[in-house]
Length: 106
Image (cartoon, rainbow, N blue to C red; front, top):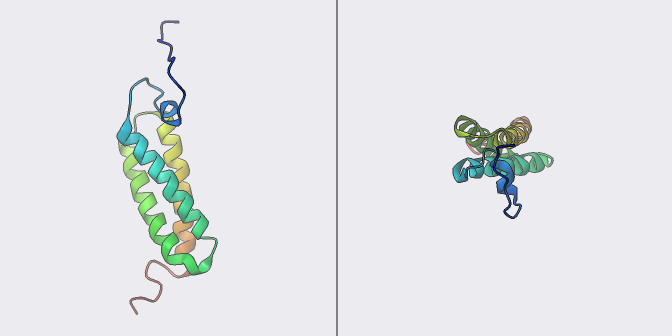
């Protein structure tokens, strides 16, 4: 095998850099999308938190979409898709429970 072996300490961010180069911005987008998706999906369970779930879900979809455009590895894209899916679930359930403004504008 002609590939160089990686002998550094294992970290989650190193697992995202499957091409051997660091991608701090792309990794940050993947992790932020994953966190936003988790928050959106978990707050969508409670109908009274529809403002949080819909806004966080919308932001998670936008951040994940931009992350897809700049991603460099398959591992980053995988996390982005998982985060965007969870953000979408939170966004759509938040919209079903009252929407982005939920009676605040009318």
